[in-house]
Length: 175
Image (cartoon, rainbow, N blue to C red; front, side, top):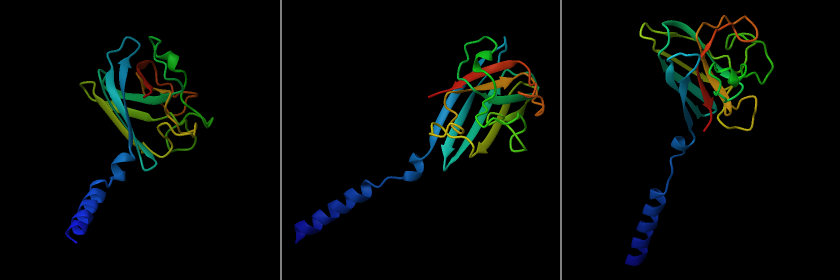
């Protein structure tokens, strides 16, 4: 009888000890490093975190001119050109007009504008269910695309890119 009780206690400990926490394992995170383009001094990181069907994007940049700048996802992860042009145009898998995110028509890459402070530091955060990290849906999958920071402001109307000026930083959205 004593052996049976001890065995039962060991089995219970083993089962409880092996329990996993699924909440911590369902998030995907990808952090990329921005490199300067167009003779700028812009640097920074961007982090994409996918959890519960939504992607949260956080970009932190330094070395910008104070003021408003645009940031977009572009169609290619190629940042080899000195001016960032190798990243192609805005990522637009649904063939919409350029615009402001969430208002009328817009590209899936039309993130928008953010402000750099008087020291040239800027941050932007957004969460969307219109992106995914490595899923099968090519109208949502951001892997293999590029992230571009622009010198100027996106006017949300000029086609096809919002007249945001030079590409001052670039990074491939790759693992």
